[in-house]
Image 1 (cartoon, helix red, strand yellow):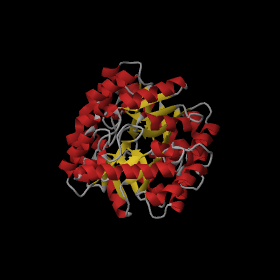
Image 2 (cartoon, chains in turn cyan, blue):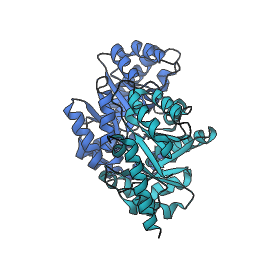
Image 3 (cartoon, chains in turn yellow, purple):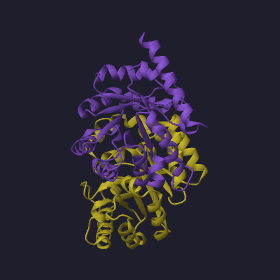
Image 4 (spheres, rainbow over the protein chains, first blue to last red):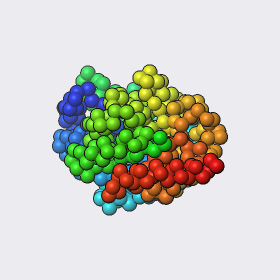
Length: 224
Length: 224
């Protein structure tokens, strides 16, 4: 399984329609990623309810944590009972930030995923200029995985080469943001993350199936 | 008024003790900053309740937003009814990120505050290497304010010089993180942000008074 579905927003007061959709999809995918707008609206409740309907999936809290260690640990503490992994930015550095978060998550058996580069164009304005410092932060922290954009597959290749085979690479930007399913996988990613293309679809289950099919088709080609 | 109090965590299920403390302090301070752990636990509810007890304060949602524009806008949308300002990271760049967020917040009469540098040591590992690119992102976006660390007052001075007098500078790191009250103000900041030193105090009201007194005392000295 190489697909992670991103849920970022809800239209109802209690988010029940999100839980409904997730419950239909989670047996088809590897993981479920929950975005900041959902937490800003529903707090920990939404993660608890997703856990209840997707017991066997990796649930990722994508708060894009980028604060001092103390605050990131307090955030993780709140969500640890419901999620398996946390996404944080590598840009904030180690001392007093990612070092603390990593130790804390390790001690609780939870996973850390670090953003290495982002899928929007502005990522090149500052973030990608520091790709070497960022690779060095990532090597020092040794997280379970990193996030690198499907929209710029050459960045994935570069990070895979620099970081080795053990680390998991998760690639957002597939679908609405323009990357085709399978392209990131062909360039060295382990998982592709799809959000709006599935969540805004009139038939999320069929759209999920279609993406999985497209991923396999492209992978078969590039691995030939 | 030059003090902003940061509330980052709650110990009770509904966060009522946080609301209780805030309600005693808000008439003494300029603003209230709410941190990620509170939103991760309580969602929008906590901001709505703070708004109810502090009608005349600037309420800041400090989610340290660092995502693509689409996600940051959806986050702001959820909290706009309850807060006056949003903190986002400048390192994510403009195109497809801060440009979008700024336009959206402008159209809703809400304030944007950009992190320019952070208070922990790791900020020097990547963030502060790009201080020139970051100053250029900030100039391009022209936010209401920026965040720069009281723990490294020379960074405040440098940013004040580069960005001019109009922009507000908010400085965290006062108290538990080591900076003395008033030092950031003496170096060009408009507001100092104090969190744990007040929120962990056995008497938050008295501690707030003490900090305000210390700020004035130091400011009187440095302005002489």
